[in-house]
Image 1 (tube, rainbow, N blue to C red):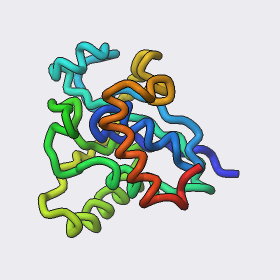
Image 2 (cartoon, one colour):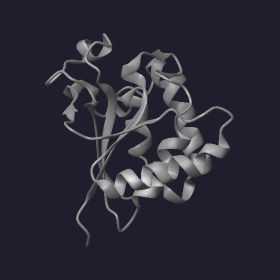
Image 3 (tube, rainbow, N blue to C red):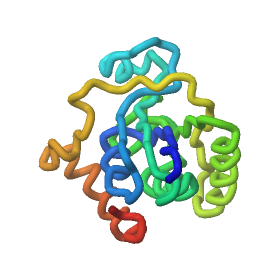
Image 4 (tube, rainbow, N blue to C red):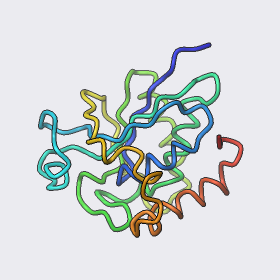
Length: 176
């Protein structure tokens, strides 16, 4: 059995990204949080202000014997719009940017190759930032498992349900 691996991705609101990855076979945990900013241990309100430089993101712990990093990236890119700068759906600001925070050089190379491969599929350029993960700050407990605890909340129904439907249609073989 391999050691769990970690991917850190930002695809807009962390509730949306977390809900997607919690459905994937081989994903052991998903933690909502923040990365890519210049303020230590930021609060949700500080990140939402756009002044901290952080992106809402998730850390995905996965079993590489079940799902590989390339599949994690494929799901990530398919379930958000990597061509919109600082925006995903109704969420606007640098905290909602598309980004991959790589953990090592192998991940960096894989992300860059994936972006190159996917570029032809989009009419606009992919603007996903690729940068090393310096620090990941977990979000407050009430942000964890948000969709599971609030499936009928309006934001979830409008923004997360369509992502899960797309996941179900395109990646049935990867679902838990």
